[in-house]
Amino acid sequence: MTTRKDAPKTETTDVAEENIRAVAQIQRQAAQRRTIAQRVSDHVSSFASRESTVAFHFVWFALWISANVGLLPLQPFDPFPFSLLTTLVSLEAIFLTLFVLASQNRLTQEADRRAHLDLQVNLLAEQEMTLVLQMLKEICENMGLRDTIQSRKFLELVKRTDVGQLAEHLDRTLGLEQTPKQEPPPHS
Image (cartoon, rainbow, N blue to C red):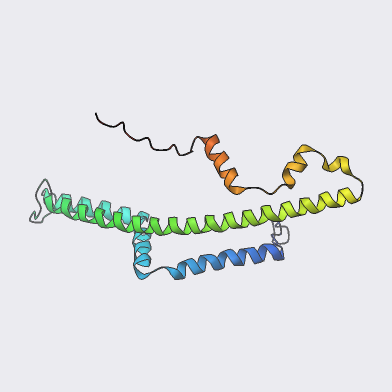
């Protein structure tokens, strides 16, 4: 048995704490920006995805079918092929699909916003690192350590990265480049 004293310590640095607070703040702001319709869509989607909702539907369908095939002591109100049940389930599916799509659209927009933020941070880090390498190169040159900084890899890293060229190269490599639309041949 481990005691609290024996448990590994999970300390975070001040920088990590600051980053955690920043991410939490971004999440709170995103939650606060939601419209009433988005909040309703999120609530409905969340409710529909619970196991209790699945169980409720199972019980509802079982009781409905049992009542309408004569297994329960009730007068059948929706005889086979259960047209009323089919209509209700179809309407529920339509509205549930719309709510889920609305929630997914909002989540996608939030993910895109985070991806843009991530890209900006990465670009800033790239620029900072390039500056650090350039400063290191100057220090090495001033100290007479030319051999250290003459490697092809180092000289390549010191250059500023062109993100547009990098994206184009990635698209070509992955086969994602856009091919120009070809005009259909003229009719004679």
